[in-house]
Length: 196
Image (cartoon, helix red, strand yellow):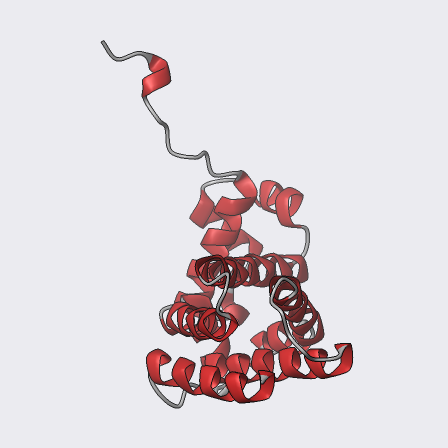
C-alpha cells in the first residue's frame, strides 16, 4: 500500500527562481540588451509588477543571475573537495575539471562571453562590476576548503597560491585553450609544484 508519505514530490520552484531561469533563457537567446521586465513577465506568465517585486531592477536581475551561477560553480568545487579529503592536488584537479566542464555548457556564461566580443556590451558590467566580489567569494570558498589540509605555507603564501589557482581557472572559464581534462591536469600540475 502506497501512502502520501511514500510519494516524493519534486522541489517547488520559487517565483524568484522562475524569474531568474527565464532571464537566463532570454539572455542566452536574445542577448542581455534585449531582456526587459515585460518580456520576462511574459516568459514566466506573470505581471511585470510581480517581476519587479521579486527582482527589483534590471541590475538586481543581473546580480541574481550571477550569484546563482556562482553558487552552482562553488557547489561542484565543494563536491570535489569532499571526494578528495586527503589529496589536495586531486581535489584541485577534480574541482578545476568539473568547473571547466560546467562552464563549457553554461548558456549564461556563453552569452556573457559572446557579448564581450560583440556589440552587446551592456552585458559587460556583469563581469566587470562584480569581478571583485566573484573573486572574493571563490577565494573564500577555496580557502575554507583548503584549511583542513596539512600545508607548510604561511598565510601570505597560501593566499597567493589560492589567488593563482582561482584566477587561472577563471581565465580558462572565460577563454578556454584546451579541453577541461587537459586544462585541469595542467592546473593540478602547477598547483602541486606551488604547494610543495
